[in-house]
Length: 158
Image (cartoon, rainbow, N blue to C red; front, side, top):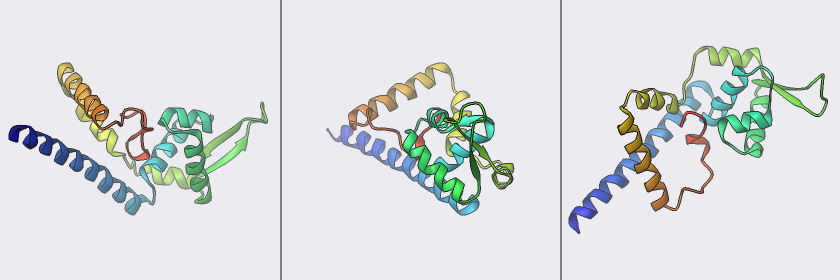
């Protein structure tokens, strides 16, 4: 029983360290660039696709369309994106980055997930599978497997 408690304690401590690393990185992004991680990810997606609408951005970053709309509202208020009606389909609204956003992105701010993915890809296939199955089991044990992913740990970088 003691051994079980020790291991579960170690797992919980490690989970807290991961949460703390995400939190610290997010605060650093805000301090340095004035952007949250979700705002940065949305901005990068818009920058990478010059003819993108909100629905496609939402799909690419694995967030709801409502959440992405709110993020784009904030980015537009700050002068980082613009919305334009498509000339071919007036119902379609295209989102584009501004020169101000290009200037921010020129510094290549990264989200924590990008570093994780680089390191994860260096692991052997069996190690990747072990980590994946373990983390999926933890999510299930915490009744978290059906929870919508949060802006801090979302998007295709997972």
